[in-house]
Image (cartoon, rainbow, N blue to C red; front, side, top):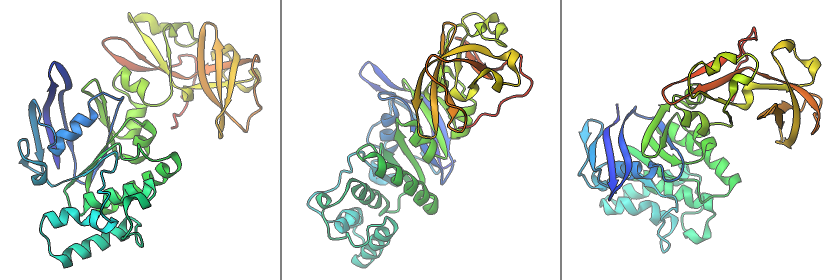
Length: 354
C-alpha cells in the first residue's frame, strides 16, 4: 500500500473527533472522504498532512512512518477550500512559491511553472493576480501550486466548495482526468455525495469519527454495510413496518427490523402496466416533482409514503390518481445486522441502476 493508516485517533479535549480508524490506499488512487459536516473528515486530512498530531495511531507513507514529521518532510501537496493564494503574487509567483522555498534554480522553476500553467489551462494568465481570476481559475492556481514540488500525495479539503455549481461540475471532470493522467495518489474531503460518486475511485464514508465503509462508489451504493451508509448515499425512504408490504410479510421475524427503500427499488404505474399484478400495492399519487429527466412521485401506500421516479416516456400521472406500486426489494436492518430482501411474490429481480 502507498498509504497505510492504523488505529488513528484524535481527541480535542474531551471530544473524540477520530475514532480508531484504519485503512490503506494504493498508489495512484483518488479517494473521496465523504460524510456529514463535523464527522471527522478534515481532522483525518490534517493529520495526514502533518497539520495536526494524532492522539494515537500510525501513519505510513510508502513504507515510511510520518507521525511527528513536519508537513514539508512528508511529500504532501495541500489544496485548501479557500484557495489560500497569496494576493500580492501573480499566478506565476504563486505556483513558483514552493519551488523557491526549496531553492530550486530559476531555470527549473520556470520550466516547472510553465508546464503546470499549460496542464491547468492557465496559459495567458501567468501575470494576473488572484483578484483578476474567476473562482475556477483560482482553484486551478491552487492545484498547480500544490503540484509544483512534485508531491507523492495530494490532499484537497472541500476543493469545490467555494465555486458556483456550473464551474464546479466542469472542475470535477477536469480534476479526475488530470489526477488520472499524473498518477498521483490523492485524497479529497467532501460532504457532497454526487461529487464523491462522480470523482472518486474509492469512497471512505466517515461518520462521528468512525470509518463506516470503504469501497468503490458502486459497491457502496449497491452493498451498504451499515444503516448509516444506506441512508446517507443515494435517495431513500425509511419504513418502520415493511412487513405490511406485499412480498415482505416475513420481514418482521427479526425484532426491531426497519427497511430502507430506494426509489429505483420501486415501480409505479397504472394498473394495466404490471405483469406481476398480484405483487403490487394500491396507492394514491400525493405529489409530482419534475426532475428534468423524470418525474419524482410521492405515493401514499396505506400509511406509508414512498418516493420513486417515473419516466417521461410513460403516461403522466396526476396528484390524487389511484395507481399501483411494486416494491422490488428493500434494505433491511436492525441493531445487529443488515441484509437485502427481495419481494417474495415476484419472479424476476429488477436490476439496480444509479
